[in-house]
Image (cartoon, rainbow, N blue to C red; front, side, top):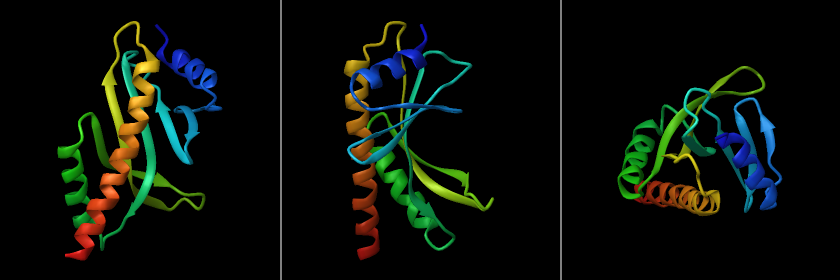
Length: 138
């Protein structure tokens, strides 16, 4: 099974206009960026990401960590965590990412997995911002 190829073919057939990237596949859906990250060491590892939804700073780090933990405890299969990225100037930024991770079987039905994964990623993002807003109101 080549999960990467299956994902690329599925996204193209569904009209997402995916493009290859060094890490896997990038595409947009409903105005949001998504990344499918290929794992060379585990062909059954399915990891779909919504990258860089919010910047973490020294001033907001404690609140961000608490809010991410609340979301992680409330939505199954979705994980929010921080990733360090480098901008064009070489400056490192810490960002919140939303991830959907499962172990696919050897004959995955992407028509069942991908739409639900996208919905859960969007729900994770929405929950993060709702909880962040509630934290700011306190």
